Image 1 (cartoon, rainbow, N blue to C red):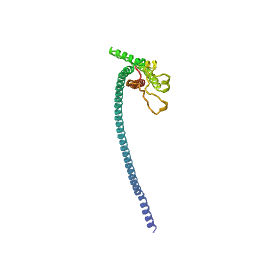
Image 2 (image 1 turned 90 degrees about the vertical axis):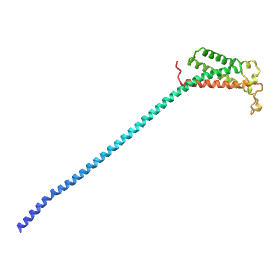
Image 3 (image 1 turned 45 degrees about the vertical axis):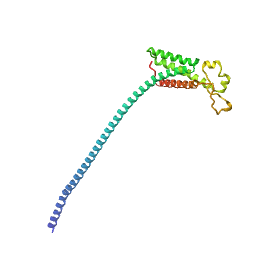
Length: 235
């Protein structure tokens, strides 16, 4: 009995000692499988990250290409706009000089007087100077335009003020100095009929056209001066 029990105990001990390596091998196999799965998952994640980075880089390159194209288009448009603006500015300046000269002549001959003589003589001077194939410096011409704008503005103010009844009663329309300076009454004021526009009966068509041409001259001069103030004058 003792011998049989010892043999059974030894057999059981040997079986118990042989099982752990098998379990360890199984555990190792499971661990290696888990590690392999982890490596594969990491590789998949890295591959996906690389793909995302490549897609982002491609999108950035496309955006940069679009931005560069837009910048080129905007640069071309800006250059074309600046050239067109320069051409239009030159045309306006050249045409403005011609228009000013014509308006000076019309204002000078529309209603002959001492004030209109200033416009007429200046018109003759400009035409004579240009007929000799000579040109004015821009600074000199602009100064002349400023002086004529002040003079024509004052002329308009005096002509406007004389349309009031107070000034017409103080200085009658038949006065000698009124005819010399070309200050003609166009509107006949009457305080009893303020709602009526009564035109002076003794006036002719040139008396009505003269203020309109004078106003056009002043507006043209003011426009040219504003353009010259925006762009510095080359001295």
